[in-house]
Amino acid sequence: MATLGITRWRSLLCCALTWAVQSNASVIVQLKVVEGEGMEHHTGSRATRGLTVQVTDETGKPVQNAAVSFRLPDAGATGVFSSGLRTEIVNTGPDGRATVWGMRWNNTAGPVEIRITAVKDQARAGIVSTQYLSDAVAEAAVKAGGEGEFKASHKGHSKWLWLAAAAGGAAAAGMAFGRSRGASPAAASAPAGISIGSPSINVGHP
Image 1: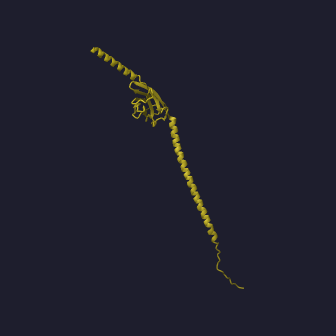
Image 2: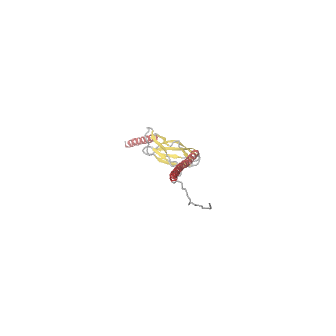
Image 3: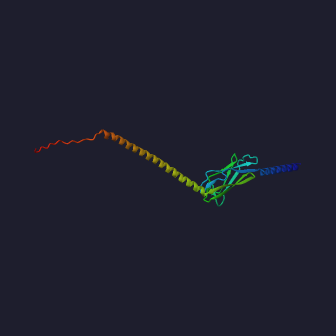
């Protein structure tokens, strides 16, 4: 009887363990990009905005403490994370989200396919997020920024110089006008002087 009881307990325990493994293996996680998909960056720049993904279960509930791996390409348009490596692992928070940012891009233009994998217990999900590196964007930004600042500064100075010149000219004109108006009464009030010499009498023979 004792042997039979032990055998039954072992059978029940094995069934319970088997069910637990199967239930863990049957958990379904979903992975999606919620921020940063399709972003375009300057070649040779550093990403200032992050790439964020969210991990949820089959009911849409956020999955916490899932390990999310972000993998950059080994060649072509690519870069490295702040650690200097091409792979970064981040755990999801209570909202099921994981974010990476600060990637240093190389100088090769083209699409950057970032492979993202989320793992929670026995469940796993993966997607690919595409970013873009462009030389044209960098050149356009530098060109627009440089010329824009220069033109704005140049126009501003010329405007102020023009106003100063106009003000100076107006002041000069006012002074000249004032002088002319002030001088004419003085000239009018001062009559022209008549010089009369000493009378002379010449006495000669009659």
